[in-house]
Length: 328
Image 1 (cartoon, one colour):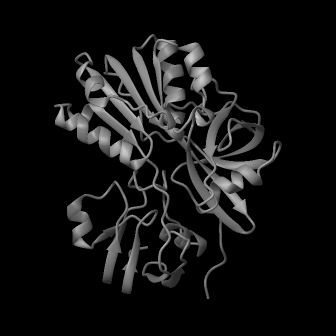
Image 2 (image 1 turned 120 degrees about the vertical axis):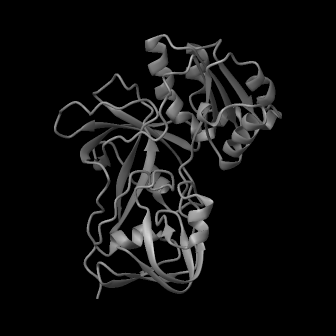
């Protein structure tokens, strides 16, 4: 019999917060603002950081990472923006449909996997859709510090241009917006070729956009260390499978719409995490035995790790086969 479910333990401390404001921005995106329940200032965070929001959804605990988009200099509140995904696993729907002003929620201390490289002489931001959120905090920081930057923001349409009006009114000469429905596109090759030495490029958006930027930058001679990206991968559904956790001495079932990490947490086994999106490496787990095929979807392990069958990132990866034993 499985152990009783318990609250998942994060790789960072947690903060009890109150939902202080909910602001619909368009048909898909809503901003949520939080204040601390204890009245203390929030811990400082650097631009590009994210927090993991804990959602108690009818007995099921969901933990989703969201970029902090508020001004890092403002310790009185944190803000995130959530895009509703009607085809997703339910976290965004919970935030949009069930969260109310005044409710208490739990979030983690900020973690930054997408920081500004302050050695850069200039910072070029490339955003796609909801990928605008980390750049809101970066822009606030650079404006305060007098840093050089420009933003190129691709949106589906004017109606779904989250924060476009705010950005273009405040920074008319630094913000460039492109609408898919008007057949507008970022002229990436020209943009990259026209930058001064010491420029850093940052991209946040759909996977295809991120791959396009990295590939194009590499083809034009940009050093890898000058091109930065962030993408939180959502766990994909798949066939249910069974896993043996040898240290905990239990066997668990991973459901069709459940990640391996969520199944481990549901059974009361502690598993560290920071991003829950295959990028940070915190939940990397050794494989003791396997008879089957791994479905690796992370950005952390390299090709040799994937091929070895000795490691798995349980936040986003799955398994198909007869036997899987993990060192948990």
